[in-house]
Every structure is written in C-alpha cells, then in structure tokens.
Image 1 (cartoon, protein in one colour):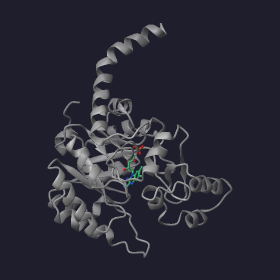
Image 2 (cartoon, helix red, strand yellow; image 1 turned 30 degrees about the vertical axis):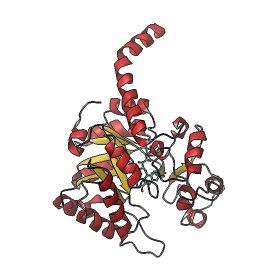
Image 3 (cartoon, rainbow, N blue to C red; image 1 turned 120 degrees about the vertical axis):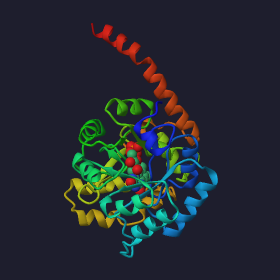
Image 4 (cartoon, protein in one colour; image 1 turned 180 degrees about the horizontal axis):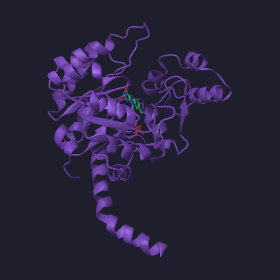
Amino acid sequence: MHASPLTELLGIDYPIVQAGMTWISRYELAAAVSEAGALGVIGSGGMEAEELRIEIRALRDRTSRPFAVNVPLVNVRPDGDDSIVERLIDVVVEERVPIVITGAGSPKRFTPRLEAAGSIMIHVVPSVRLALKAEAAGVDAIVAEGFEAGGHIQSDGLTTFALIPQVVDAVSVPVIAAGGIADARGIAAAIALGAHGVQLGTRFIATTECNAHRACKDALSAADAEGTAVYSRAWHASRALATPVVRRMVAMEAEGCDAEGIRAVRGRGRAREGCIEGDLVEGILPAGAAVGLVREVVPAAELVAELVRGYEQWIAELPRSLEARRHNVA
Ligand SMILES: Cc1cc2nc3c(=O)[nH]c(=O)nc-3n(C[C@H](O)[C@H](O)[C@H](O)COP(=O)(O)O)c2cc1C
C-alpha cells in the first residue's frame, strides 16, 4: 500500500485504522495493530479517566508506534455525570496522546486545546453537512461512517458507498471510510471512491487480542449477511448483532412503540453484558452489516498483513480482471 496524505499525517505504514470500540478496544488490541503498521485505537467510552491513563501507559510499554484514543463526546454516566468527557480529554492532553478521534458531538469544544497540546484530531461524521462543520472546526482528518457501521449510526444516514465520494468532494482534509468494510475488497472499493484510508471495527473484534468475550467472537464468525439489525431508530439509532433483545426492540418499534418505551428496554449496561460477559440473549453486541464476511478469529497483526496483502493483490490483478469482464460482456 502506498504512502498517502493520511499515512504521512499519522506516521503509519498502512492507511488502516482499527476503530475505537467502547468496552472492547483496549491497549492489547491497539498496541498489536500499531505495532503491525496500522493505527491502533484505545476506545475510552465506558472508561474512567484514570483507567484510560493506565491503558495509555500500558500501550506505550508495548509499542513506540503512533496510536490514537477515541473519545465519544456525548457520554453521560448512569448517575447523570457528563463531566467525564472533560476528564478523559485532560488525560489525553496530560499523556500527550499523538492522535485523538472524537465522535458523537461537536469537536469545536476541544480542537483549540488538543491542537495546542500537539495532538492530531480526527472526527467521525455520518454526513457531508457534519463533515463540513468538522473541517471548519479545524480537525485534521475525517472518518466518514456509513449506515452499514456497527454501533451508533444516523437512522436516515447514507450508505458508505454513497457517502464517501460526496464527503471527499466536499472537504480538503484526508477522509477515512468506515462502515461495512471487513476485507481487502472493501478497502479497494473505499480507495476507489476517493477515501485516503479505512476504519474497520467489527472485523477487529474477531482477533486474539480483542478483549471481547469469546462468545462474541464466535457469534460474529458464525453470523451471516442477515446477522445484524438496526434498533432504537428514534433514540440514538444503532446497529448490532440481532440478539433476542435487539429483535425484541425492532418488533416493538414496528408495533409503534415510542422512543421512551425503547429506552426503557435498552436501558444501560446491555452493551457491557454483551461485549464483556458474552450474554448474547439479553446483551447487545454492536456489529456492522458486513459481519457475514467475518469467518475466523486471528491475531491482529495477521489480519493487518492479510488486508494489506489482499489489497495489493487486488490492485495488481485489476487490469486483467477488468479486461476479462469486458470480454464477458461483449
Ligand atoms: C462494538 C462496537 C463499539 C463501538 N464503539 C464506538 C465508540 O466508542 N466510539 C466511536 O466513535 N465509534 C464506535 N463504534 C463505531 C466504530 O468506531 C466504527 O466506526 C465502526 O465499527 C465501523 O463499522 P464496521 O463495524 O462495519 O467496521 C463502535 C463499533 C462497534 C462495533
């Protein structure tokens, strides 16, 4: 894979970002990915500030390569405390984290401080409108995340295929494509659409170093193309593995249940139950629409190497396969 404005900006070998994932992207996974030449990301959602500090230091014991911390900007704790975001940003600044990825909220609040601290700032958006806002707020790169993505999505959001070229045309900072990318073909498609790099979440859960419960990794490997569902469309819409509780919420919405009713079922702590405790009945495991492409659990370095190798092979064979298709059509 060639150097690009993104690899140069981030100081990484390959323009592949392992997505920040609440509960299940800790230092073991992030360090393994960064050490393999891609960008490892610690997901700070669900963490206390001091827990994040310990994670950052543990990662630094394992690798000296660039890494990022993902900070969801809307993060209200069960007791209603929303100051956690400030405290997580304090730690990121104090620990001189080189790259910060924010999402779910406005980056404007934090860009001056993070810039002054020397961090590169990346913001996740689901639309062209929010990409333009993020660029105006001064971020260095954008993750454009389509409707296929695992986790929080925009309920009427564009698909990755439609979103990426429109964001690429609208902004001048590097664009990272996310949502429904799980193998080398997806990477090649994203690059063809004009993206400078890709962010993969679901595929990285099925790695040895990910701290998700073994039952989650097995469930992802077994899931087919209909394996995920979008639920809670009226209140922080999300895509997750279609576990019984997720199916229950989808059915309730189809019968006209309002956001308040869904919120009561969704409650708090179900993602933790799903991801960490492996409860795939009452728990939630966020996952993207390309889950059917996840077949096996592999070490993260192997996954990065396979994505790079597969991409290179795809590009090398492109002229021949286009030629073959031209003859088939004729
Ligand atoms: C289990 C899980 C947890 C996630 N948690 C976060 C998060 O805390 N912050 C965030 O910005 N995105 C989060 N996401 C979205 C990912 O960062 C990423 O953009 C998405 O997974 C890409 O789609 P894919 O899963 O189809 O690869 C999460 C996704 C998953 C699957």
